[in-house]
Every structure is written in structure tokens, then in C-alpha cells.
Amino acid sequence: MQAYGPILARIYDRRWSAFAARAAAAILAFYESARPGRAPGALLDVCCGTGQLALHFLERGWRVVGLDASESMLAHARRHAAAHVAAGRARFVPGDAAAFNLEERFGLAVSTFDSLNHLADEKELAGCFRSVHRALATGGLFVFDLNTRLGLRRWDGVTLADSDEEWSVTHRGFYDEAARRGGSRIAGLVSRPDGSRENFEETVVNTAFDLGRVERLLGETGWSGVRFARLDDLAVALARPEGEGRVFVVAAKEGNS
Ligand SMILES: C[S@@+](CC[C@H](N)C(=O)[O-])C[C@H]1O[C@@H](n2cnc3c(N)ncnc32)[C@H](O)[C@@H]1O
Image (cartoon, rainbow, N blue to C red; front, side, top):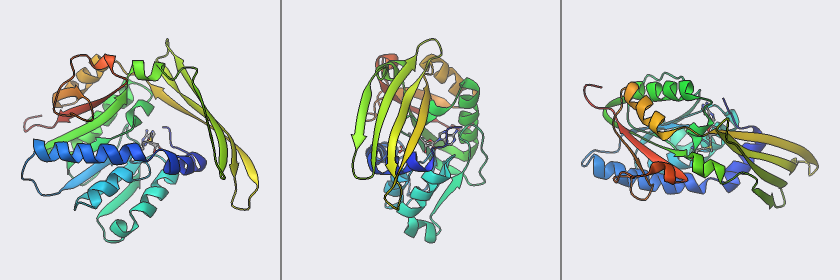
């Protein structure tokens, strides 16, 4: 499991929440066109992070369960969605995306910003597909994204610096072709509440899953209608998904699956 630590969660909350908000709007619009006439229902957000995607749905009448391995990320999510948590419309629960069991049933499940690339291998990915399938109601949809091998390779050797009054860190991208793993080493100095600074280092690792195998694993774990698409057009299947840096995957839980 790659539960983000408290400092990475703090940086993430300030720097990287925008993608989830953008993805939320596109996924909800897609769901409404794919399942017309349905009232806002229940959303499962797998690897929910700081809750930005959840918030978009909550503000539009959905109920949300967000699951994440990081208590630090969950704490940000609970803070952002505090009113909805207090009203009993949102829950942010600790759990492992590779193997979980929830009592509720959901009409839509999502997992965004390459979260499922954090799973170590196909066994974990299949475990995730199985867990989400169990949690969805019949007719439900699962929409998630993955960095492709091409997307992960692009970061190899790329260094980015990020500093402000609270931190001064570098992100060093790496990619190991043989292991099909890449990611980023984030290291530097971060300020404490008393103004002093502490050293920080955390490595985020992504697995580059073969998309043909992803499609097969989805089929083996009960999913139908699988397609790879771009966020801005989730209804249209890509002819060459491995040619993209990131793909969205849409899958359905049909009546007999
Ligand atoms: C890149 S962030 C994405 C967060 C959010 N989905 C978004 O779009 O902003 C990845 C998240 O996955 C969580 N995570 C990583 N491995 C996990 C696992 N095995 N089970 C549950 N959460 C996991 C991390 O703690 C982190 O919050």
C-alpha cells in the first residue's frame, strides 16, 4: 500500500487537487448521459485522497463513501467535506483498494489521478476490480484512470522544483523499463508549525500496467462494456490507448455479471 504521509498529504492538498475537481465534472456529466433520468445516488471514490472529487458530487446531492489507505489524506477530505460528513452524507474510511468490503451498494465508482497505478501488481489490481464490482449495484459504472507506460516513461529524469513559504522540495521522476515501474522522489525541507524546518523525503511509485491485460482482468472479474477513453470524451473508445500518456477506463456491472 502507498498511503501518503502527512507532509505529502499537505503538499498534495495545496498543489494537486485541481485534477480531481476537473475529472469530477467530466465523470458526472458522462454518468448523467450514460444513465439518463437517475436521481443523484451513491458514489464510491476509491483512493479518494483529499476529497476534491467527492465534494463535487456531494454539492450536487450525491452521497459519497471515500476510501483511502492514508489517514493523512482522509483527514483533509473530512475537513473539506465537514458539513456533509456531519449531515451523514459522506464518510471517508481507511482501506486498501486492493481488497475491501463495504456494506453499501453504489451506482458509480471512481478512482482518479493515477491512483490505481499505485497498486503493486496485477494480483492487487484484480483484487481492486473484484472489490469494486462487489460494491456496485447492478447497472453501476466504474470509471478510473491510469498512467500508461508512455506516460510514466516521460517523467524519467525530469526534475521539478517547488518552493514557497512552507516548503522547498524537488520532484525527481524515474522510470525502470524492466520493472515497468516509475514515479517520483519528493525531497526537501518543510516548515513545522513553530517555524523551524525539517527534512522530508517520500517516493511515490507507479506500476505501468499493460492495457490489454487490464482489459482482460476486468473481464475476468465480471466487468462488461470495457473501453479506454479520454477524460473529455468518456463515451468514445480510443483506437490506440497505449499511445496516450493517461487513459480513462469505463466498465459496467451488468445484470448477469
Ligand atoms: C495521486 S493520489 C489521488 C487522490 C485522489 N483520487 C485525486 O484524484 O486527487 C493517490 C491516493 O491513493 C492513495 N493510495 C495509494 N495506494 C492505496 C491503496 N492500496 N489503497 C487505498 N489508497 C491508496 C494514497 O494515499 C493517495 O491518497
